[in-house]
Amino acid sequence: MFCLTTRHGKERALARPFPLGLGASLEVSPCNTDQLGTFSGEVERLDDAVTTCRRKALMGLEQTGLRLGLASEGSFGPHPVMPLLAVGHELLVVVDLDRQLTVVEQRLDWRTNYGQRQLQPEEDPSAWLKQVGFPSHAVIARPADASLGLWHKGLHSPAALAEALGTCRRADPKGLAWLETDMRAHHNPTRMRSIRRVGVALVRRLCTPCPSCGAPG
Image 1 (tube, rainbow, N blue to C red):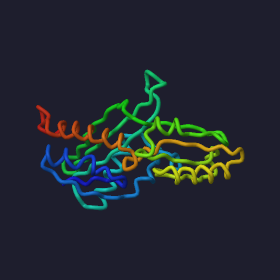
Image 2 (tube, one colour; image 1 turned 30 degrees about the vertical axis):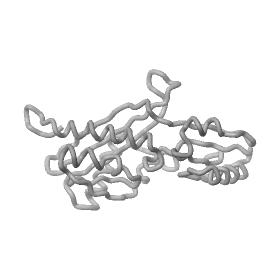
Image 3 (spheres, rainbow, N blue to C red; image 1 turned 135 degrees about the vertical axis):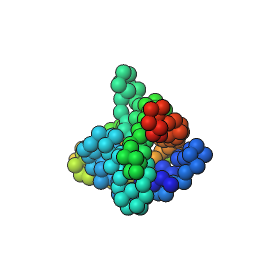
Image 4 (cartoon, helix red, strand yellow; image 1 turned 60 degrees about the horizontal axis):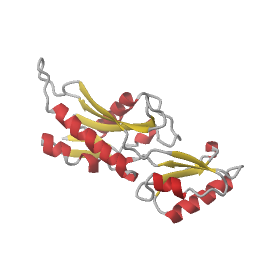
């Protein structure tokens, strides 16, 4: 059994690859992984993605007492070669305490709806919202002045978004609002599919033993 550390429903993406490929079940540990960093920036991620992902897995193992840990980490931004193209970097890490082994699988995925936009006081965001897949994909709204700390996350409905934008514009000194895609997996079906693809690749890696020592991965 693997302990999957997640608060964002990633077991839905990984529920098939691990039982079908390894005959292994997943136990979810909903630790507060937001303390290691958030997409929207309230908490800065201080470590690199692999280190952060491994820390997540270890948090779950400590909570559950299991010996096999699994965690996911994603980051999003401009493509390293084509800056105008957004890209997602997805990581899955397995920690095996008995073997003292860490196995990493990752991929760059151009199939992402990642985006951000600053709105003028009366600007209509409809075109941008359609581009990023709203309302099936949630968005986050805040005042353009991030120091005000008013984040409205997981917005899926036009009514909720309109109310949030009104609050943000009234709070911002210049009446500006900031919109960004909510990249948390349970609010982003595109990202959930990407995690599933990495999960399949990780299971294949774990099923491939080292020809020298026989260790998985």
